[in-house]
Length: 127
Image 1 (cartoon, rainbow, N blue to C red):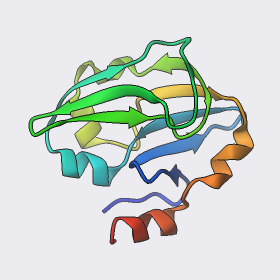
Image 2 (image 1 turned 60 degrees about the vertical axis):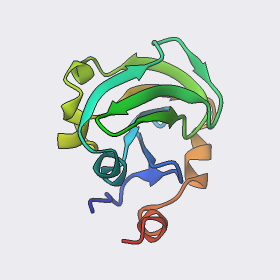
Image 3 (image 1 turned 180 degrees about the vertical axis):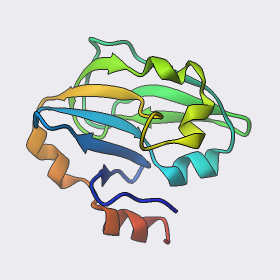
C-alpha cells in the first residue's frame, strides 16, 4: 500500500499535502481508501469558496460498491476543486497525484502537524 512520507493523514483516510507557500494544501483520499472503495465512478465536491470546519464533509465519492463521505482534515476554505476528476477513475489510478480533490487555504497551517504521519497511518491500516 502506497503511503507517501511527505503527507499527513486522517483516520478517515484523507491525505493532506502542505504546499510551498505554507498556507495552502491539497487534499485527497488515500491509496488504501480508493482500494477499499473499488472502482470510483463519481466524485461530488463542494464548490470553491466553501468554508470548512475540521472534519466537516466536503464531498462524496461514489464507487460501484458504496458512497463515502469526504471529511476536511483541517479547517479552511476551498480555493479550487480538481476539474480533472470529471474522469473519476483518476482517483483510483493516481490518488496522491492527479487524483487530488480540493485545494484549501488553511485556517491554521500548524494544525496539519496534529494529523497522522505516514508511520502512524500505516499502523492504522495494518500495513
